[in-house]
Length: 435
Image: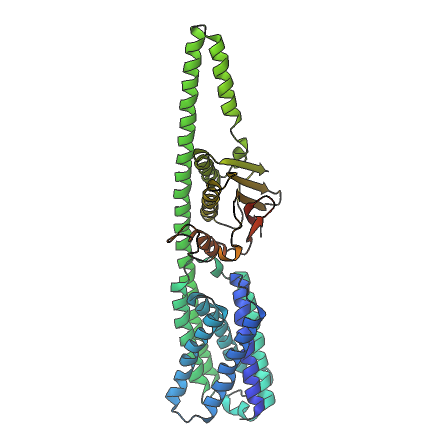
């Protein structure tokens, strides 16, 4: 085989790796530096292009082992994607499956198109000695594969699936079936009927996979909705409990005032009313701009917690916070709870003992939420998001890592950590943008 064939295989294998990165970027908001991406292109192109081509050409093995070769490459490629891009096995399998499924479909479709449009018999034998035909076939396959990969961003729900493991396992099985079908019908001969049958079988597997994913996602949505409803009910119970306490205090105050008045204790009555007024005036009414029950409950609870610890809790809301876009309210409350607990704990150990929450609800649906706390020392900003890192001792520091895991699922929710050295305030800034 000439250098030209090796070069074409290597380049197109590298471009396939680029499609895997594009799929991850579109569907999981994945980002990586240019060095890792280039390393993936080089390694993937070398393994699937250079080594695979030389193996098929010069290594004298049985046809059965040649059929096993794509399975071996399957696992090598998965390991390469996972290790270089630093992603989970589930995402590596799903991204590799989708691109390889698109590649398999393109491999099925291209010979049929060339046969129908140009009356050319595209087989391993016919393209072996025609490098121009080989190049055109690869370009056709790449174009079809690219269109399919790019189009996935418009109809997939993969980024919404919390547990990708069962889905990735099914994807892996489907991909292996497609690889074996394609390889079995393309190694020695080409027959349009045989190709059509293989294509139908592969599509049947894909359809089963899609049906399963949809059923799985509906079940996950139902469980998530049930969990959120339970969370809302619990939050509502906490809010109602606070209202009962306020009503109980109100009744007690009225009883005391009634007793003072009927006993002509007017000076004492005036003093008692003044104390009640000061206490009532200290209530932060900004919390009532939060119309979302769950968010209202979590912030109210943290306000009470800070108050019992003697921490000054400043809440400021601009606009009415009712609907929260692009993120599950239960997960937003989990984030706010972790940030608020960290802020209260840090503020309690500081001299100023201040916690501030600022919420800006814009007319276009965007929400900015800032949680700030006073500090005595400058935190190590580059260490805070590392799982297990904490200045409080062992078995601590998982909170921010949990938040990072939640936020990684939402490309329209941005988080930024800031430290104001002039004010000695640590700030967690959450920006929720409506898609």
